[in-house]
Length: 439
Image (cartoon, rainbow, N blue to C red; front, side):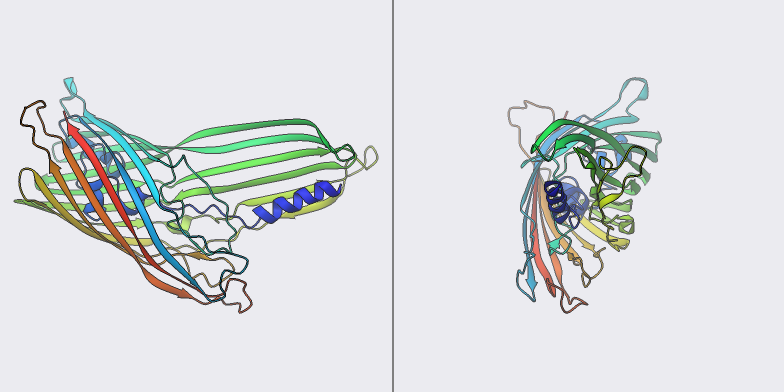
């Protein structure tokens, strides 16, 4: 009996205040691919290769060639959390550096379709391991938007169609995996052993859609609208333990991790000679974000102690109440510029401003974020092929982004709060590289 209570108490102490610290990934914050990153994440109007499978699947139908490539993303975080009361019992959690890789291919469909449709698939994966969910106490100071950045295995495939010369439409699907399971255990407290154990776990694949539309009034002008549906990774694991001579111990944990909100993005591009300008805005519905702390239930009844036909009583019952995050919807403006310096060299630059969706961390929870300005530079290089081995040259694209957080200082409403006031500031560097080729 005492053993069961100790087990339950330990589980509750670790999990009731836990949270899945996982928000955006590099694709949401900076764009998918070096060109998107270098031009301030305005790729909805300009991507027309396999990068478009995430940026805007409608643009897949604008390309008339097979495109294959692979690359890498590297993020170096240098954020700082200054604290009024030192580390106390809740040491700060700073985001780790991230290293990711991607590979993709897009191809138009010929035959009777006559290149009016195209398919693409891309995989974006962390090189340090697969999708990861963390559980942190909600009082722990943490840079929520950037923690576990990119630690998500994403498989995206899509189709673009051009029904009219000036109109293309497309749809993509992101595949994510959710975890559901259950466990049944019988144990004897007197004998200090488990007499039966059974566990069932299911990894369920869910599809989250992306829809895009591009209007091309003339070859130099594009308008694009993209909707990316809310995506999330859910988990739920109930445990039922039949405690001999006592009753039924029930423990369950469930929650949402790796949440991304419904997002509407509009972008336009205009080409004039060797210059290409882009501008856009994204509207992200972060107010939909559920509580980060998981739901935990723990109960123990005395059904083995009551007489036949009697009603068991609850010896122990705990049920945490998730804390609402209180996030708000945000509007993210973006702009980019591309200059075709020569046949072999393209130079790019861009800027993006992201307001923070998180409220001031002046309550019990210490989820930290601040407005972020991202400035980017990039280049595309076409390699010479003096031996004429291939019909089209190999291309290397590279982009570097510098994101700076505005300093955000917060005092706790409760002077006795163990964490005390905090101040978040700092920056990160995002380097992305891709090698790709048209066939």
